[in-house]
Length: 212
Length: 63
Image 1 (cartoon, rainbow over the protein chains, first blue to last red):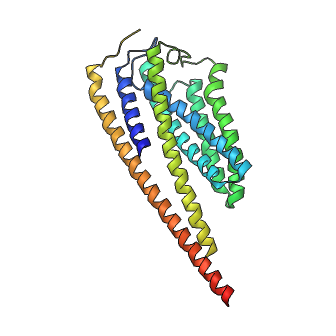
Image 2: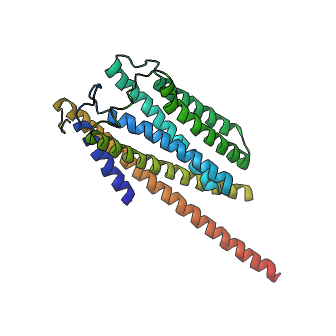
Image 3: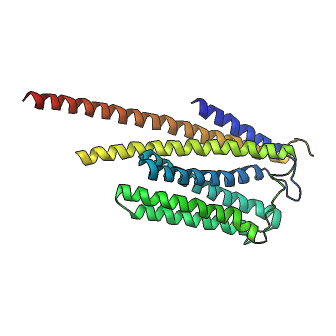
């Protein structure tokens, strides 16, 4: 409960801070910046934790790691959808169009399609341990794909996305941005933990069903 | 370096954002409590099954 209270206060303070910030260099002022960027960072964090837990499942065969891997992948996908929507709104403000075929926009859609395919493949396998093994491999490959689509692709092609204004602006910007990133990472961690705990409880209930 | 200030036009949006976040947080807390309850029930059920299984083994051993 204490963690929930900390999350509540932290994110509320982050929202207020985002609305009070002055505009970044060469960008239209919008509080969406302090929601969109943390969501994109949270997405990558969630996918990395998903891949890590996939590797932990392969090593330990502890079903909790598989549950966590799946949960973080789901929450990361939700973050990707939010980052895409808020990014389109911000793109409209800055570049006068919701969709600009920018490598970052294309990359996040490619990431979403990658994870959609992974969820479909997981659902296509019935047998439990085989499903978990395959998922672990997908989760590890998935995070590599996500890193390529969202951080490497934009450096290979010309992008409208500014590289530095937010992360390398003045100290106040960096503080507001990282404050919000930490807040939303705490939120997604809480959500994924709950999802994994429910999945573990469900797996135990299924075991009773088979025993009866 | 600019300083912190609120644009009066965005204050209502901030209010809506905070209210929305409050709703999301309340739902998160509710889900957390529900998850704890499900886990407690699963643990209680497992303990009951272990107890039944032990008493069954005991009866089988005597027979």
